[in-house]
Image (cartoon, rainbow, N blue to C red; front, side):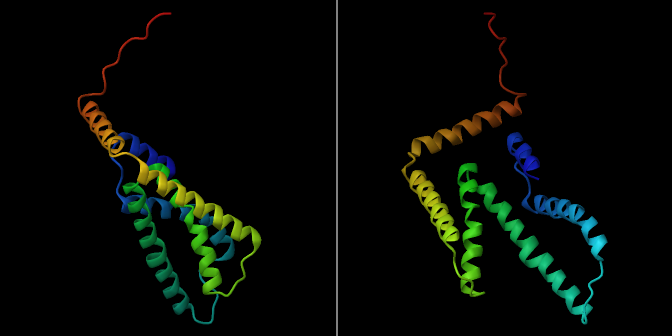
Length: 162
């Protein structure tokens, strides 16, 4: 899925977050299907209707909706920013584990959290210091690349024989 998103990004078309989400879930389903076949596709529980209802809820709300929002946000931010900010997910998971489940933080978890938050803070500081000229230059470069693509591509010059 990452390769597909990168290919669409290079073409300048981006990609619809919903389509990307559907493809991601589809690929994950195909990869997990052999394990489900071995374990059994029908849930073994005293209340199978309730289990199926919960599975449907988990598939739609925290999975599909979250992925759609994830890809929408990732498409709106620079790649360097996305790569660091997406690393906050384990920090959130650790916070939920402590606050909701009552787990205790270990030294490595605290160290990892501090490192990740420091990296995100450094990125935010670097982005805020980035001159407006550089941001406009990126937009102008993108416009030039789009114009080249519409005209059949940039002018190709033969290499000099050396």
